[in-house]
Length: 428
Image (cartoon, rainbow, N blue to C red):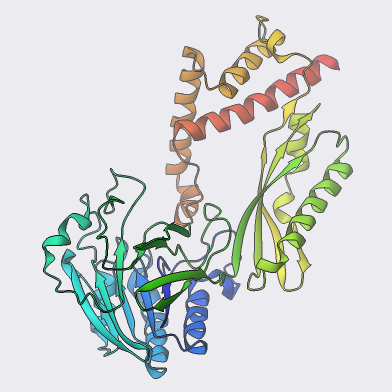
């Protein structure tokens, strides 16, 4: 038996930093790829673990593509079994009820565990599922499964579908205890909510996050796509199939010795070209390869480097056939050229104060001054995030996090640039 498993499509959404005019930017593009993959491989069922529809876009943008996909699967004799997540807890049931399908099954409505035996061309498949009853759920649904009276047949291959958070026990999105999964049945769990694909357990029960099949932002790097599950008796395995037309990557570029804008530019293009070609084997389905470039090393003009990178986001080049590489942003983590930062930090001067701040941030120390600077930086990040001008970034989850870690990173970056500028002026 072959099962195709996915989650977190967020239909109605599009990948960030990709032109909206490109059809590949829309999640509908990957949804159609999933349908084609299922039909071409004659899979026995398609399993979906929640957040199929994005809350911000909801009903009207998702209903057409979703229903057309269901109809194609129905014509191919492929049943669909799914649960709803925190984004589509109310929308997904409405879409299904809008047009009745004999082959589409939504399990666990109203937050109640449910089991169903599905007839597939490969035999009977037993599926257990739980759906979000509201947008926020602060309790672990696995704690309720023992008392659900599911009457499972232990002789049938069984898969569990669930949407929840295995990494945050204080989550408002169904915090899951990894030790609470039933030992024998189901033999595999397909979990939604986390967008990064991850196999969490390979022994029975097999537990994994398929992740979002289309990478939606720079926070979701690497390969994305559904998982093809193979069922042999009660043994189950899964292999990811890269389908996302968009891929995000972060690379580091050492700029030490790049003493001219031309030398820096050549080094940058070479690094991106080399990385793209090294990963060409994983890019067959990728149309847009979006890079974040982190500058490292030391340089006499840290602020000068920032000027050299101002137009880097206009880089666009087809480095391998049918895959266009672009730069989303450049992060400047370059150190100014200082013979002895520790000695400079002892001086009661503006450069000395900056050097001391840099050292404390690098070492994870927080003097009263650094703590105050971090607090003010967090406040400033919050102000920017709330500003109407930057609200579109929120939709794509591209805003900077308002956390100590994010504030410290930005403060360190700015301190290094300012110290480099002061030292450069001193030399002149």
